[in-house]
Image (tube, rainbow, N blue to C red; front, side, top):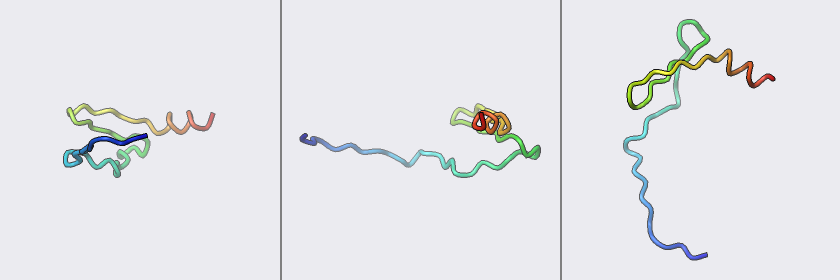
Amino acid sequence: MKMVGTTVIDVTNLRNTDFYPLNPDDTNIDYTDEDGVVTQLDLTALVQNLET
């Protein structure tokens, strides 16, 4: 297999998604995407799903 060309990946606009603290209820995390849309992640439901 012959590789041709160069691919440049611009990472200057990537968001850091390494840290999302728990909400004060200690159950949910709010994720805000690039468009400002907030999605609440219910960790209880996620854990229950993984346990089954």
